[in-house]
Image (cartoon, rainbow, N blue to C red):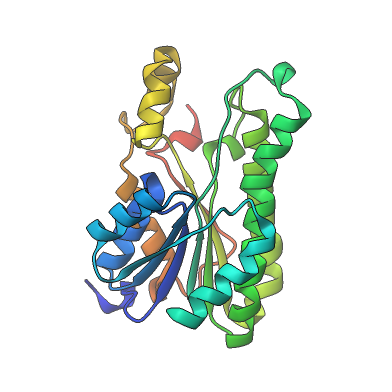
Length: 252
């Protein structure tokens, strides 16, 4: 690998890194020479993931929705493993329900996990990155922030909020050499997506028909995009939301 794409000597914190896209990001970052710390609510999947990822992987059991514990999480990692160079806000939840059936509690649960927790953890990491005048913060956005998708009103609102957060934080952090970017996955073949699509073949066909490349992406497609945006190769890239979607976001 060209050294400019290397993450050698870098430590990345990846929320929801035990499976799916988060786990693929961890694999790719380790392949690029980085050290990763993955978090999640359940210890067993994290243990299994770290065993597979190897000696450059660590885990911490953590629920990002408990905002009161996020400052302590960052302090624990920086004290025991080292300074966090890269934050990947990957953890999130979705809910498919017609908008008229979404309760206030439903809506707030999605917003709390996908937006409030992302900001709280970003703030905790950014305090330290700004002080060191170095860092990369990655948000995981969605096609739901790019165009209307029915039955995901809370999720779409949360990801649109993430896109806005990227722009504001870029304007505040750039002078401290802390970059903030987002990756907007298209339809990616995770276990969760396969389950959702298998129960809704019309939705699957619609997604494929809208994707010019004609097939769904792999989790590693997101992982390598995350490596690029975290590396020196992207040192002048900030405030960007990068679609990794096979062309899905352009419509047809």
